Each structure stands twice: as structure tokens, then as C-alpha cells.
Image 1 (cartoon, helix red, strand yellow):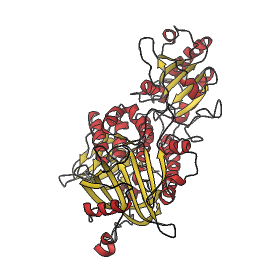
Image 2 (cartoon, helix red, strand yellow):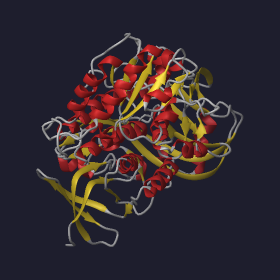
Image 3 (cartoon, one colour):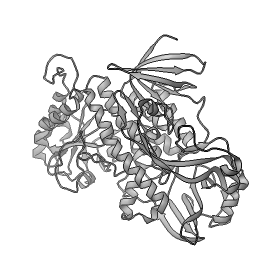
Image 4 (cartoon, helix red, strand yellow):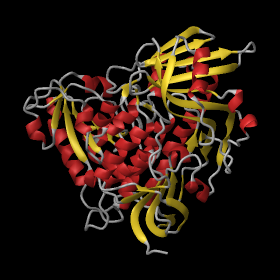
Length: 569
């Protein structure tokens, strides 16, 4: 066996989730290796929906523009039952949300993420398979088989399994993966349709039997390209395993994902469209097709010691609402910034327990909701349309009451610790002749950001003191948390402070703060954040509010929050 190689984090699986984990770790200065057993990206449009929340995450990374130039908008869905239009769902969001819903084939998402990660110095190691791993107190030892068919031993401080529904990492941890499978099999195809339907709208067309059950189904999602759609539908009897002799479930019993043994023909897809399409449609240029199965499962825990699972390795469910890939990407980003603090010695290992505490409840909710929507349809959801859209956009995901957020403060309907930090527009600088969004202010920053809202010119001194407190908090600490020689830097080392001045604040205020000062010229920050006078907001690296407090309490609030981050194991 070759010599042992070392790295901070070994990531297994280079799909969107593994690539996102690598991107965030590299942005935070953490070394990582990213391996994938496949020799190349799969050319399939599997996961195609990109949620607004994911675009916000990519904006922070500086990747959003590249994705937006490649994707197409998803404007809504047309729902037909037995040939008649039953509902039209428009994917509308409040005007302060910076991005809408989008569609992009998964292989394109992977290509863009892979190029981004390569720009940060990490190249996907293709054709490299994880054979086994063992962890101890100090790290993880993994055995890999490389593309040259040689075995290699890798020593890493941490291991992340982003290796899909049949995860080797999950099996190695002996995690329970409980749930079930849908009896139905589906065909999936990437085709072009010549029909007269509104641009940017998907189609969900059902045929209900006399007993009310669905006995025929067609779902079409628009993709980049003229008339191009990813279509899914029930498998016809001629392609069933009873006829073909195929066994769809793999050896691990998890019946989920694409099958390589059965590939429907264009005529098979056209036959379903002829039965269920609301408009006459002629299909052509089928790029690929497959048969797939759907299961709904979730692990009993997202981590064991120094090893973690994310994405499909942790949770699988119906593709309804395009929740899976996006949930996995947010798993990766939640974990990555915490790992970075621990690897850099700025936080204790106990911080990593918050990954399971924050993300597994999200996974449980997504699995349950997508199963309900798959069975009853999204149009049967009892939530108000606005709430439904915000939830589908993943803008309501939050961590209130979790281990890493402060106590509620201010108006009850204001963003609280654990909530997504909302974007807003109308922020101005003295030199710029155009307004900025809060996302513009946060873009490219990797650490926590302290937003200092100054409601009154008399509070400018408090804001300056708060900024100084932020800098002081970032001073080196002893391992026991007391000031002193550099032994473990505090999590505040990367903390950056930004002032947001109310419209009534003195014009010269930014020059007196010692930190960047933006004016809330449109009043949007005040409207969305509901500050109770001059207020501080600590925004986590993943874009969630970590703490909210009066400016006069900034030093104490930062001390409490950052002490919790740096707690020993």
C-alpha cells in the first residue's frame, strides 16, 4: 500500500452536495480532498430545481451570477386532472426576496461548482472509490482505490459522506436508514416538446381512476433550451420488471434512484404525452432516459464522531418541489463553516454536534412534506399560498431554540436568532451612485458579520463602542477562554462589523465609525429587521441570525455567543 497522505477533510462524493462542502471549506481556508468513484460526471438532468435559498448561498460564495446565466426561470405549474385544468400555481415571492425559482440540469450545476472548487485549488479525484474507513480520537483513516486500480491510505481529521442514497459512509457508520419505498416505478426523460404552453411553467397532469387513485401521471419541468423539458411518468406494463425480468432494488434494499438496465424509447414517452398532455405535443431529440424508483428514508443521526453524512446519504424522498439537492447543499454549508472553525482551532469539537441538532429536524420535515405532496399534490397543502411558496423556496428553514442561537429579542414578528437573515435593498454609500442589497454587503465574507443598526445620531458613540467590542472579541484567547498569549484564536478572529445607518442619522456618520457604514436610504432594513432602536444583529457564515441585541449590550452578547462556539468538547 502507498504511503499515507494527510488532509483536513476527506469528502466522498462529488455531486452538488460534496462540491458545495468542498467549496465552503476551501473558502474558509481548509484543506480537503474530494473523491468520486465515477470516472466522469453523469450526463443526466436528475435534480433540476434550484431554490431561491440556494441562490442566496451561492451569492455569498460569488457563484450566483454564473448559475443565473446558465439557468432558466421556473414561473409556475399548470395542474390538469382528467384532461381539465384544475389549478395554476404561480411561483411568486415577496419583492424583497432577491432570487426566484430556477431550473438547471444537475450535470450543469456540477460543472459550475466543479470549476469554482478547482479555482480554489481542489480538483475532483475521479474514479476513486472509498473502500473502508476507521476513526480514532485524532482522526479518520480511509482506504481508497484510485483510478489506476491501486490502493491508497488517507489520513484526515474529518470525513464527510456525500455519496448518495447507497452511501458507503453511512453503511460504514452503521446508521439506521428507516423509511419505505413507493410501489410505483417511473420513467424519466430529457426531451424537446413542440407544444403551445406558457414559457417557464411546468406541467403536472393526472388521470384519476373511479376510486380516486392516480393511475396515470405526467410531470414536465422546463430546462434550458427551446422546448426542452425533463419529463417523468409511470412505467408502462411493457417495461415493468415482471416483463423484463429486472430487479430494481439494489443489494442494500434501498430502492431509490436511476436504473441503468432499462432505457425507455422516445415512443414510450410520446405515448404518455399523447394520453395526458393538455396540448397536442410532438416530442423529439431525447437526450437520455431511464427508469427510477423513489424511497423516503432518513438516518437516525447525521454524525458519529469525526464522520458526517449529508444530502442523499442522510435523507431521501420524492422529488416533489425540488427539495432534495437544495436541502443537501444547505447540509453541506451548515457543516462546512463549523468544521472550518474547529480545524482552524477557533472552536471546540462540541460545535460539530450542532450539525445534527440543526439539520436533522430539517431533513425530517422535508421528507414528511414531500411524501404528502407526492401523494396528495402540492395544491392540497393547507398552508396559505404565501407560506407555501416561502417554504418551498426553503426561506423558512430556521434553527430557533437550537444550540447556536441566542435568546429571542425585539418584536415577536421580527427576525429572531435562528431565522434566515433577510435580504434587503436600498443601502447606499457616499461614493456609490446606485443602491446596494444586503447580499452585496455580505458577498465574499466567510466569517460572522456584525450588523450595527444606528437608529439615532446620538447612538453613534454606542455603535463605535460596539465595533471596538467586535474587534476586541477577535483578540487571541487562551484555551480556557481567558485573554492572553496565542494558544487558540477566538471565533471572533474573522468577525467583521458593518454599520447600517437609519435615514435620520448624521450624514458624516460613516467616517466616524471606523467600520464600513451604509445608509438605509429606502428604509428596507428597518422594515424587514424591525430593530428596537439601535440594535446589533450577528449574522452567521451560513446567513442565519445568530444573535440580536441592543447596541449597548454588544460586548456581552458577543462574548456569550462566541464563548458557546469555542466551548471545549
